[in-house]
Amino acid sequence: MLTTIGFDADDTLWQNESFFRLTQDRFIRLLADHADPDHLAERLDAAERRNLGHYGFGVKGFTLSMIETAIEVTEARVPASVIAELVAAGREMLEHPIELLPEARATVTALAADYRVVLITKGDLLDQERKLAQSGLGDLFDAVEIVSDKTDAAYRAIFARHGTGADQALMVGNSLRSDVIPALAAGAWGVHVPHEHTWSHEHAEAPLDHHRFFALTSLGGLPELVGNLQTPRKR
Image 1 (cartoon, helix red, strand yellow):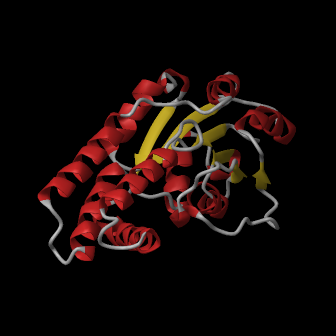
Image 2: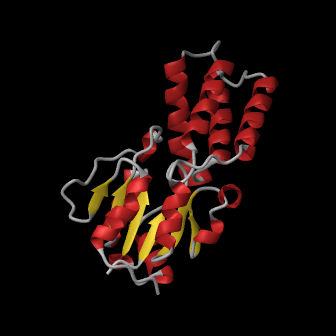
């Protein structure tokens, strides 16, 4: 019996990674005199991965990683004006208006009528709260969980707290690594809805042989999939 549906936020309900990529392009242009673009992209990616344990996921950690990389590739000779531009770029990302993805509102609205729907996202608390508020979707969710990372233990705890357990829950998102695989490990259904831009850190092999794994080409197909799984029971 499926009772609870978890939704990822970034790049599942609204655009996110595209803004990171635009800012990374800006970072590469600012430092073009110090290293070739591919090398800069590799150094920045390495810094982000190295800093996840310190800064977590989100814009602030990304901005600090850009500054750190700029200092490294210039051997600490990066102009203060470049640092200032990187800080400004990070601030602009934090202030960027939310752009809902197609079918996001209609899908959440349709499923909220029959199931508990929970927003499960990771990253900076203030930024995620801002995006949810601007999205206009907040009132549709029975609960919101902003976590430092998405693990099978986190999913088990969330679906026990806001539902009837992971075995009666489904998690949908664009990241196989964060939204699908740990949810499956927790005992839930996992539904992958790919986005055209997904951070390399979130890539993983699709668990095609798992009996609770499904893949959709768009979020709009979720209500039909859910309807084929179980008879709804919200409370």
